[in-house]
Image (cartoon, rainbow, N blue to C red; front, side):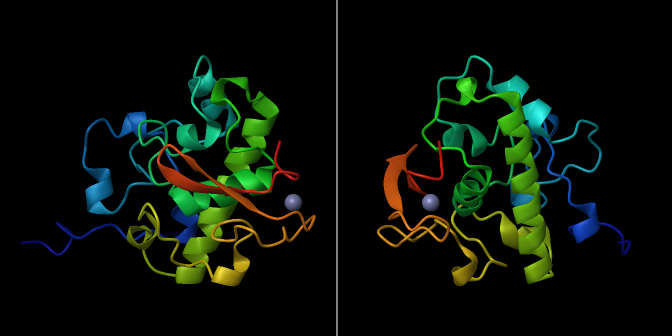
Length: 176
Ligand SMILES: [Zn+2]
């Protein structure tokens, strides 16, 4: 057995590329711990991709963002935090979100995952648990887990709703 085989690739911050999951094509990327990146794929995860994939979709944008068939690796906490950072209400219909807003959202998803990995400093394996957000300190979270607490931006109490069977935290004022 060669040293190069069978070991999960180490993901460094510079190699983070969130790739459209359609390119993973049935491979068990999630199981192998390399979910949010597909090194061999060509298409980029960006606002244009999200916008294109969301046309005609009536699901909530948060549910859309967490759809593993759209993007692999965006868990519940990261989705909530990215939507807050992008100012997008989690219940907004995915197909109604404008391309410019998807551009911002894609940027925030990348920023947040990059930050988490930099914090954790290990492999992407640690960052794909649907509910876990390793690498994030609790005090860095703007909305997740903060129901009833004041928004750090506008002081409006953070709300929580269940969306796609997942607890969804948001600021009713900052997110539209
Ligand atoms: Zn707010």
